[in-house]
Amino acid sequence: MKILDWYILKKFLKSYVFVVFVIELVVVIIHITEQNENYIKHELNAGQIFAYYLDYIPYIANMIAPITIFITVVFVTSQLAQHSEIIAMLSSGVSFRRLMRPYMMGALIIGAVSFYLGGWVIPNGNKDRVAFELQYIKSAYHFTDRNIHIKIAPTTMLYLQSYNVTDNRGYRPTLETIENGELIDKLEAVRMEWQEETGKWRFQTWKKREIKDMEEIFTSGNTLDTTLRILPKDFASDYSRFETLTMNELHSYIDELKMRGADDLEVYEIEKYIRYTAPFAALILTFIGLGVSARKARGGAGFQIALGFLLAFIYIIFFIFSRTSAEAGSISPIIAIWIPNIIFTIIGLAIYQTVPR
Image (cartoon, rainbow, N blue to C red; front, side, top):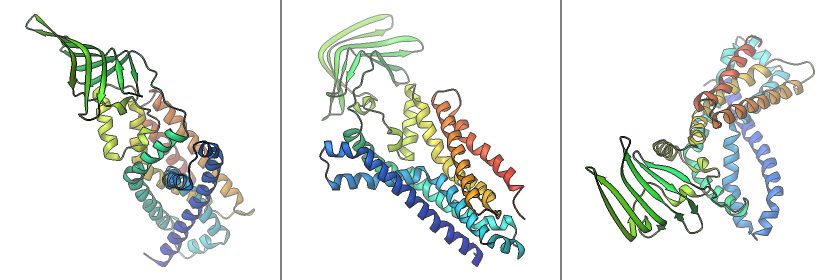
């Protein structure tokens, strides 16, 4: 790397850390102010609150990484432009494309680190963060669904009249095995209870009907322990569950939801694609930020910084709209997540035509 690359790269990375610190400071202060009443009500000590924010701060930093990169690029480049440093670089024979190299390197470094942290490190911290929020911040959770239908295997369906998350009991369960459109067996019970020591479900007051070669076999009993591909956590609150899964866990959970034919699959697929596209978003927004702020403005850098914030706001609007559409099932998750990046790539190419050469 040449001196020019090191100069811009160090300036870029230092400014990024500063921007993240400032935004995080504001976010944390606002969050503490909003939640202070909950902390007092639950009589939490400083250690518990501090431990929570050790998980909360990296989570927020990683979530806003593409936008903070964009703001950093606009801030750094507009300062270079106002000090006529970019003009000097271009006058000395450095092309604008060459000038982009250290910026893209910085965005690639941040994007790669963000991808690793967001895929494996932060989800583990989110397990504690989400548990803390469910216990001390969110309202008490109650499973209120009735007449629940769950596909727990390719040929097996579980039906429940209701489920109580407090004691992990399901009422009026029915377990059916259907192959090639024909009923193979059917198990009914008064209730099913989770047995923590064995990791099995215990059916109470059950009766079973089996069909073999046109013959029906009826059996019954008081208790029956069996293993099912469903656990009490599947009935627990799904608040931010997708944020607590590492990439490996996320892929496995999506496969399991597909096997069950679950309705909330889109939420987890969106999370998967967001993690994969985040580094690309960082590169695209760096490209746009550089194009927006590379020209020296007579009135100072204020207009360029304001324009940068406006474009960042528009990007967020596009992202939220696309994500909402995907969660509603009106558009494919992978298409929805790529739409903002595609649109802003086109915007970046248009801006690139206007930058000084």
